[in-house]
Picture 1 (cartoon, protein in one colour):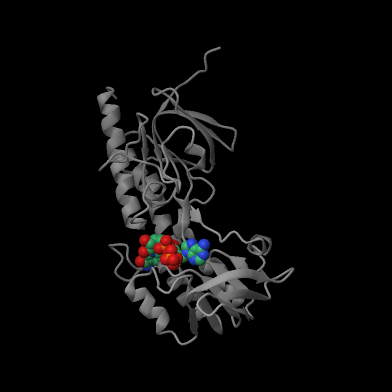
Picture 2 (picture 1 turned 180 degrees about the horizontal axis):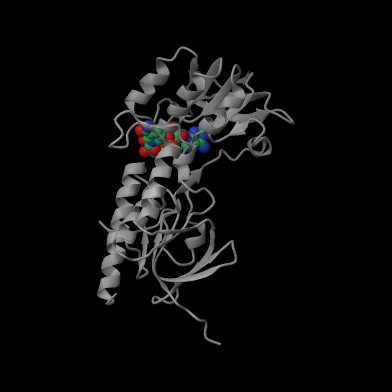
Length: 314
Ligand code: NDP
């Protein structure tokens, strides 16, 4: 039996800066987009404290508040938002891409804009997994409050680790930053900020061997690699801030991904090898990964989807 397909013009997967921006543009172009919000509507900015670098907010803005504004703007122009997560896609029919959700829904669309972003990476230690949610966290802004007045550690030397260490330093008695090499990856201004904070202790050339504790974090065993010296830090909170992995596993059968899972798009474009499928934001950007660049590529994807549909006589 032939499946009944009544394809939507434009389906957007993901509700971060890229997804909402694509929705604003697609809705204003009368494409009547449907946006599937996924497991974390608002994306990574929902677990961010203050955003100071998004143009137009000279005093800064809280991440969740900013995403609420994005959502309202997308809805104002008629975007229909479904709070479901895409579990599977089938891009075998270029006229009607098939999308299945965890709500048991099947949708077809002429154009699909993938804006699924990225998720936090973990070290891969057994103890880290076992104590996840019991003192181990990948989000200082979400969980830092539970450790006020306590001593904590954070792994990573990028901007995220610096930002989160600084945030934790205001709540905790002492913050140990565990940086695996002898240098930070963070921007100079962020590095200076942590270096100038008296209760942040920086450990370079340091590897995390084990998070200690059975029911809750009771310490962390680290190795100072240059001295070959093992040490236990008496922390009750252990934060991981070592970067992110793009949420693209479900696209593997259909789109070309690089070895880290980022989707390949054509140069200066969000188009993929599949006609009518576009990718924007952190799912395809391993270089810039900013809210503003994600929004920029979301805009590009919607414009490209509009042009693609126009060429089909939409
Ligand atoms: P990054 O990839 O920039 O940094 C990851 C850090 O984690 C590096 O120090 C890296 O070490 C370390 N690391 C990676 N894997 C491991 C591991 N297995 N064990 C120990 N350490 C590890 O990620 P971020 O999340 O910090 O930043 C992502 C992007 O977002 C960047 O472009 C950043 O500039 C931006 N950003 C900007 C902010 C702002 O402007 N306010 C705030 C937060 C992020 P190594 O260097 O040795 O690889």
